[in-house]
Image (tube, rainbow, N blue to C red; front, side, top):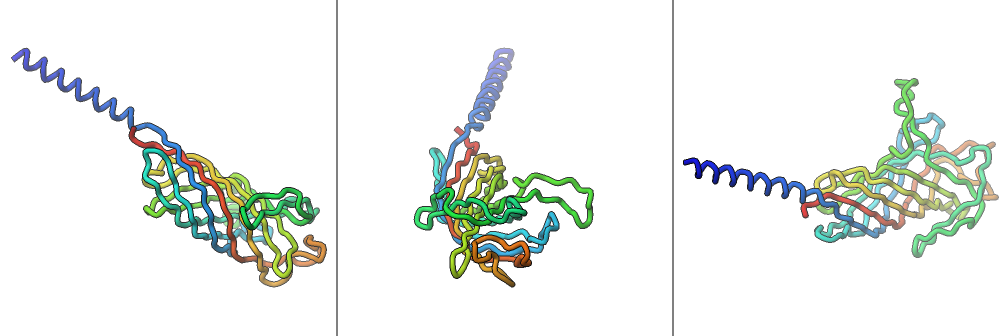
Length: 245
C-alpha cells in the first residue's frame, strides 16, 4: 500500500509539472503584419468637445488586406471605423508649408504647396454637463478594425495631420496618421502594435467655400459648418499577439 501511495503521488507531481509547462508555453508572442488599402466616407457628427464650433468627423471605410504571421491563420481585414476631431495647427496663420499624398502609391511629398494644416485637438470629456471635467489625450480618439472572423482590433490615434490643397473644383485633404494598438477581441484581446496610414479626401463643404483664391482660409469669412466626402488610402499594421507555442 505504501508503494502504491508513492506511485500515485509521483503521477500527480508529473501531471502538475506537465500542466505548468503547458501554461508557460502558452505565453509565446507572434508578430503579424498587414499592408492594406481602404476606401469609404467621412461625415460630421454632433460632437464638439472643445466647443470651438468645429465638429468631430466619423470615418467608415472598406478595407483590403490580410493579417499574416507564422503559426497564425491568415485573416482578412474588412472594415475600419474611427472618429477624430481636429483644429487648425496655427489658427492665426492659416497657411503653412504642406505635404501632398500621391494618388498612385500614397507616398508623401513634403513641402509641396502652401495651405492650411489641421491636427488632432485635445478633447474634453464632458464640457456641457461637467465644465470642470479633466481633459484627456488626443490619442484616446479610437479606431476599430474588423476582421472577417468577426474579431476586432482597437487602436488609439497618436498623431493625425490634414493638409488642404486648393484644387479645383473640389479642395483635397491630404491625410497622414499613426495609431497604437491597444487590444481587441478573440485572439486579439491583448494585442499590441502600431498602424500608419496616408489618405486622400476630396472635401465638400456644406454652406460655403473652405479656401480663398490663394489657397488659404480667410479669417474674415465664416467657416463652413461642416464638411464631408470620400476618403481612400493605404497603410501598414504591425501586431503582436499571444499564442500557444
